[in-house]
Length: 406
Image 1 (spheres, rainbow, N blue to C red):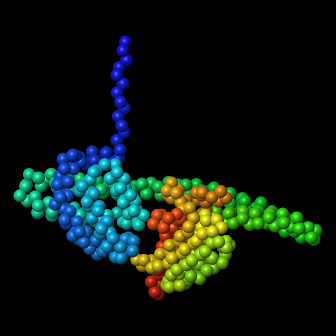
Image 2 (image 1 turned 90 degrees about the horizontal axis):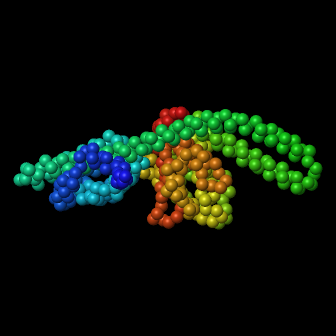
């Protein structure tokens, strides 16, 4: 009896293919968009002007743009490229991947979704006006082109919403991990304090009874003391991650905080540290001790990454009503596979590290109403770059400008 013919298994449908099928995006729609592209490309510059004029009318949307109005000129050119790809295609998986990257950028700059919907409607109205003008003598084609534009813009919105959903799910997963982490740390941290306290007490007694001149014993007791101090610091960092240590709300000069942090870190002779613009910054309000810890952690990370030689740069500016600090080093940088988990507790690439430095930095900055992000620096070669934002309290503002401790 002959075997039945084995059919090839059907390839799984990608998300983009599913979205196109859902909105009914067809080859006829592609042809209609290509035809519209020939008409619309001469208007891309004008549409970009209308688009960003509308955005700059709204404070929330304007603030979300990195650099505010100073970046709008560049963004207008980027929008023209986006419109060219929108109407010219090809509408394949590479197109989908590119649109996802744009959506993730919106997530990164915290662009509210309602501005995204409003902005897309501006483009929809502009394209519809073009269609009405150029297809008025071809009524049989108007409806097809209108439908094609509506479908592709709906696809764009669906892709952007998908990136927001990805971010939401990632945040939920992080919160669940942090909750478990907090419960574990709370119990283990306090339990470790007791044996470490016993070791410190015993060490103190042994040093008092040590034979004078016994250098070998002194060396080993000192090493025990150093390791106990390291263990205590790890326990403290762990507990700081989960407890609501009250923030001080007092005037802060970041230049002074930076100098205090710099003096607390042992910097190798071959490492140069350069800072720019800190002395020109306005006075902020916050907790100088916790902000000092931010600088210490970042500086220690950079030195550990570079070794005995390299360069660290801290550049301070005021951008869109916030203080922006760009912290860079000439180390190996962070691989793409690690970046998305860089600020998660216990995530580390060091041989001797437990991954608490950057999560603690992020927590401190967020409690001050600020943020930190890792930004690659391909234009400058290897190295790491962190961009920190801190709000500027208006003159006469009170500590209420800072979020309450959670």
